[in-house]
Image (cartoon, rainbow, N blue to C red; front, side, top):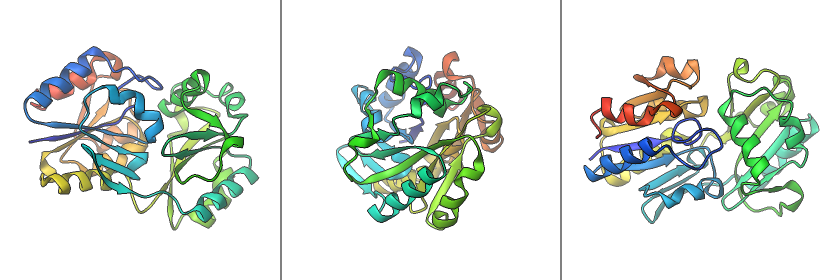
Length: 273
């Protein structure tokens, strides 16, 4: 049995979309028919990935590893301590950083984030996801409605990396600041604060250990730098052609882009179908 882990935005779907290409769904169906299991492995929280659960995935590594399931079993559930999420939000807002808080069942965004994104350069899968999500109201609620429910991850967007310095100084011992390639998005820095207690790679290990599957029988497909821990953990790492150059250099295989049947071609090359 092989375990296959798929990032969503820019890998399984076009950024911001909840509809995989027909070829990707065919590849997933065929590999599952061979006895392999396919998991979502994403920075999205449960609320934002839920539309994809109409498809027969075998579980998820969600919130960048903070919430992990296999079938109906929850293997890991690790939200941020309230005092740490409050401190992060205070310091980020103080420095003019636009934020979204990702709880399990909802995402809360700064009300003026849409205006900020309207001036951002296209081309980065995270920015495209948020731009589309905001325009379609994809489970993103105004920050004013946030009532203190546990937060798993904070997404940040700003004009200059220096705007993150104060939050980094206070939190970098406990949180990894994963920032996307600058050249990919021009006048917009974007990334996320991820608890060092987990990441996509650790989530994959939890699933593999639960199922007693050796790591050499795990496969990971991604496109952006928040997939790095997945790429460095799995036995077979794959980056999409539309992915970050730094991730391509660390991957075993590069396949065509998400719009060019990349997943199907990758599954073929790796003998998964």
